[in-house]
Length: 470
Image (cartoon, rainbow, N blue to C red; front, top):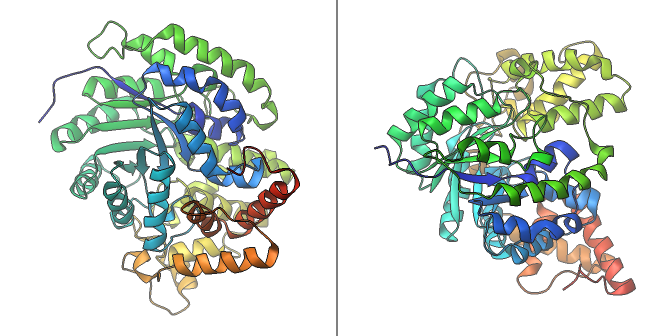
């Protein structure tokens, strides 16, 4: 049943997905905190502040403890829900983890300050969503299940509605349409949201990247169809690889039946801060100006496009971007028309790069592609290329069950491993419940996580590491 129309809610992504897409996730906590109090005053339904690539970037590039980041943001913005993007059974890594690792991660994320978990699976395999949704519900947080929107012969309006129904049946508190590549067109959005509103009893959220130029029109038509919440980004961190501008959508809705009630003057003040700050991160900006219609065919997200440009530049092959985008579309089809979201986007892009740069398709098959073909990431929407799958299986049967059912519990082993390594290397781990944070850091990123913990300990020994060690 349709609910009465009410004001449109907004989730702003400036502190996470916008800066991930525009600035390679390099925005430091020290540059977030000065504007946090003003962001907290706006009245957003939520602020996306964590998850996705942020955890990895904190460890790999910024020498920041990602757990300390979310605690600091929550403390500074107590009035606003803190939202994270969770890759279901992949958590924030690039492979599946055991159920006990998922349970521990969700519990610790909640304890450190996360209020809303947007849970998505790049394969759109609902079996991969079950455990993390259950864990979020058991911890008393908001469990938002997501469909990763994409195009292909198996992706119909009916299929999306059926997947959404399954997510609602798992207990999700809301549903997100996660259009990471900006593929959702305005009139399709109207029809999809209309059908979802008739089929579901939970709120519908919509996220559209601006990369293809469709996002603002798509959001407006979705609002007309009754969508409850949209993702936007403060204008100074909007468009191109990012999202539609918050201020633009607030202005469009002003004085109408879906008026957001947000203060444009306050939003513009916040935009001024990011406008100046963005200049300091210019070295991480991508090459995109305006929008890129090639991505309607390649189905690549804004963040992935920026990564591809960077990788090709490092190889002195920027002129081959069109070839790689074309090859990505072909590889995606070979791999069952999967949505291109993390980690599938990296898997497909990596193989496409290998195919183009070697001059021969599938001269070698990357290990992640082989794992995907073996079923270790879940079921694909359409059958895999049989020849490729047989090469990957090497006579062994594929995985047909929920992939995590084949993974034994890992937490105690990981805890023992880390304690032993810490003793050997003189690493000072957190004490009490925060030791589990360190174990999870090690679980998700063993090499860079351990290197970070070692560096943190060395800094603490040298000068008490003010701000790093409580």
